[in-house]
Length: 200
Image (tube, rainbow, N blue to C red):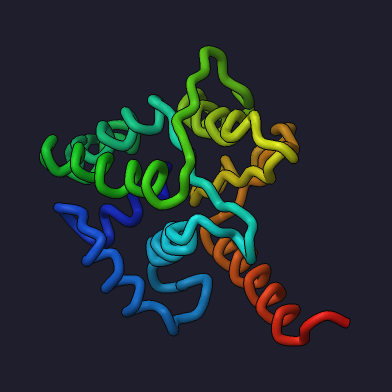
């Protein structure tokens, strides 16, 4: 969830894929993690999902839920100085926030990666996670539940407490954006090397 807000804040309103692509190209040669601005790692993580492929033929789908959709719009429209972290957001207009949902998240989920929308009643991981983080974790946990063979599930977050939370289901791997970026890059490099060497 916070990776989406990172990208929105980095690019500014309104979100466009042209701005996204330009920013990704500008930082393509800088090291991972990006020590000066960790929001760049969030942008890179999202950029790696656009193809809908993890490595080789492996699918890489982005999934969402009504909770994530609503939270994205709410945080985008909250004032920048809301008094507390919970009440603070990006200060975007409602129109720009709705466009962010449609043009960034829904494009990724439905058009680029073939993911979907998770519906759930109860949440997993609360505690140790707070309710909002548990909703995000539950989205990852229940995503692509009907896929065979069972899919590997990742939840990418910049939240330290979320990343380090104990006793969460091992069916979801929680990673920082830079960890996810390096994982995908290594996996793709391994596939490329295998193809280069050919059958042995």
